[in-house]
Length: 171
Image (cartoon, rainbow, N blue to C red; front, side, top):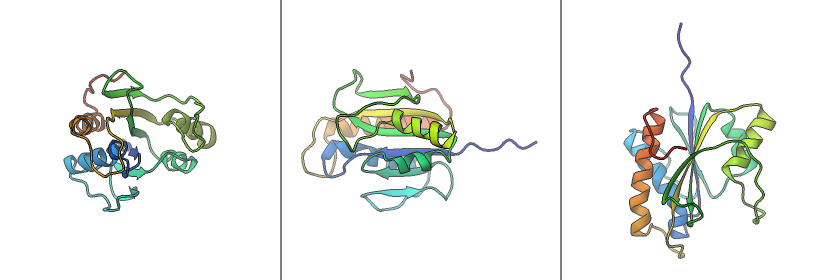
């Protein structure tokens, strides 16, 4: 009997025009290179959902439409930037469905996205969040030196997670 292959989606989000806030884009492109996968050259947003595994999605922010896409996958990896709100510079955690209020009307967390996946689409994919510390948020493209180093580490951890190898600090 053939075992079905799990479908994996790596979702990055952030603002490329605000320096380290766009770190997820750099992480996704690095992961794609390490896995010998090609992704679109579009910088503002891109998706590669149909052509192989893992699939990639990058956008400015998570939206209800993200949950619709995520519901079609067995494993999800959310990739974002944080500003020191967690202790670790490279934070890795399992994501459970939990509604979280946001002070920003246009902001959805990975946990809230998972609530929509479960409640609307009746799916419960395995999910993790990789969050990288951002240090500079000027109106420029490119990463600060400190965040660039963390981005490479994050990409390596995502590749390990994708291959089901042990991941550092996975809670």
